[in-house]
Image (cartoon, rainbow over all chains, first blue to last red; front, side):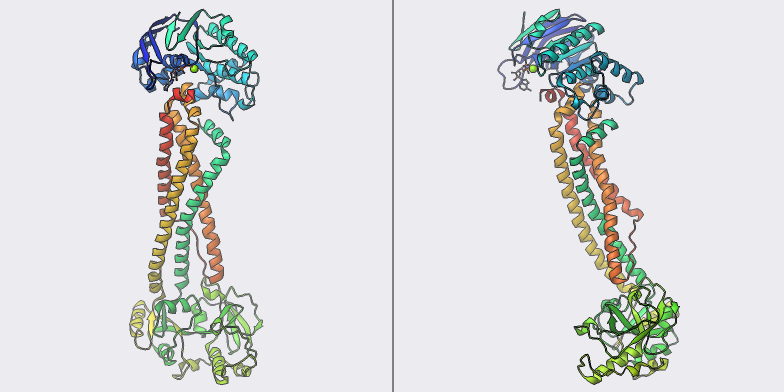
Length: 222
Length: 408
Ligand SMILES: Nc1ncnc2c1ncn2[C@@H]1O[C@H](COP(=O)(O)OP(=O)(O)O)[C@@H](O)[C@H]1O
Ligand SMILES: [Mg+2]
């Protein structure tokens, strides 16, 4: 499982007096479960965007094992992310009109010409694992908690070594949020993936995450 | 990927249908202009086929052709009766027949002529030719039966239609279909037309009760009456030359002070030149409409793609290839445009068909509506333009940053 090593990372946005994010040095061990906290605007999403390759690294180095994201172009980061990162966001980004199963398979379908036959079975297995029993149900008819479960299944389809969740419970009620939080930790443990959850939901404070990072105005503290 | 595109199109089916419909209508406009112009050109050319050479009094060549071939009522100047006599005796002439415009029956022209024209236009389908002056042969499309009797009415040239109370024709034969306006005509001996109008002229401005000697028409047709140098003046004579060389000599000889000889085909070709100019104008209008529609559609699609940038960008964040995002948008646009184009071709064809059928009913000239291989070219160009235009929203989606898309 990949290890993360960040050196001298600085992310600035025009119009913002200080850097949105400044991380001189950070190392995460493979398979670590990390909770990233911080006030709104502290830089959590910016951090996740950088380590998932969604945004280019302007200054510094961000290495996952041997891969330096700073050295990859946009297409290279897309391909690397498709192969190594599973993403769960606050919004589900599911496509209405498609079934739960088709939503789980959609990114894979749009990443290669032919879907490997085994992938469809894997998607059904994952849906069952996250508690979705009717894989053929159209996603717009699911409850919000179920939608986020489908999103979790989609994040795991490519068996990513890195699982990233940005405020995964913020748009759910407490019960569904707890279930999704539990699922993320369980599934990361099952697959051995490195897990980073950005959230200020207190329920994660009780969760069994072995490392905490706190962002304050773009700087890591503690 | 195609499954996703279809699901996506289905989800936006009303907007998609509206866009496809607009594209279809713009395409139909262009297709209909092309097809209709061709149908009119082919139809009228075929109608003029049987008419080798037409001789009339000096005046408008176009009017002479329109009146003789297409039986468009118009007051033509007359040429002296001896012209027909001269043509009938000319060794270069296979046959010649007068064309005299009589009255009408239920909006269908009654044309005075002679027996050779019946043969020359294709012959009879049933019955026999006229043997007496009060006998008539009807065109294939005239809704009368053999044995029917009818009273002619004055043509529109005389204002309100007046029944010639005393005159009655009996139908004795029906022509084979000719595919010309003559299918709508009623043919009677030219002498009958002459006699009716002589009688009227003698009676002065006759009212409905004016003296018309019906018994004057109850006489056998006399071919020698046409040879008389004192024969009444004629608006037009249809001439069948023996050879092509004869045709050119006859045309030269009969273009002079008293007569005008024309090849209808030649006059039509000149008319088509004008028609072609009109077509160009219409085609330009259609192209302009298509360009406007294209711009409007592009705008609609751009707005649509901009609204959906989050959705589309999100696809990439979750692992979709950048090229796939491009292809989805491009294919969706091309599919919608292509569908609109196909439907538009069908609509244009149907529209031209409807219009041509209507015109054919009115004029008696069948107008063949059909596609030619060269029609594929502008359509292919249109599709190509659509494919190029579709690149714009596709590039927008391609360049959409997934991080921004996720932030929303
Ligand atoms: N594209 C951008 N342009 C300018 N400023 C941005 C942009 N993205 C984020 N920021 C700013 O960077 C800071 C960190 O934002 P973010 O990482 O979203 O915080 P968090 O996720 O912790 O709420 C905020 O002040 C935000 O306004
Ligand atoms: Mg955030």
